[in-house]
Image (cartoon, rainbow, N blue to C red; front, side):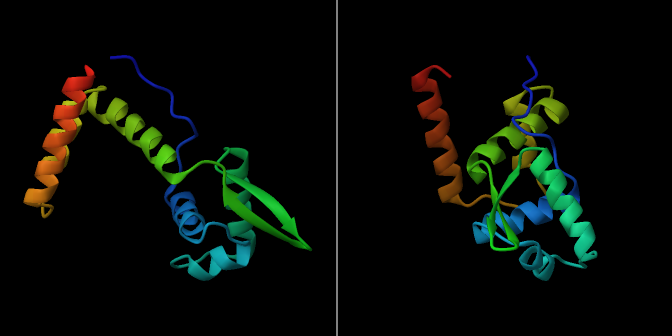
Length: 131
């Protein structure tokens, strides 16, 4: 299988936490991010992490007086799809079926009948579309 390059650089744990906050809020200042981070580092450390996220292309800012307000550069679903493609390529050799099998085998995460029906419908639709 051909390996796809992720749309954006991968994130560290702390960078993911920051992005979760910004996605949840829609936009955020450094202070707002700091207030919501678990076991927060210093203000300067958060500012540096946000700057890295801008350099990686995940965030952009606008200025509101003296304050920078940060927002995601891409919709969450598009980033999630890119991240998932990276995981499938990295850990499952590009095999979607191996990745789905691993998801179905996760401990403590049983799928409901409705979820299984939904997955079946998506598989059937993909067959019809020749994917």
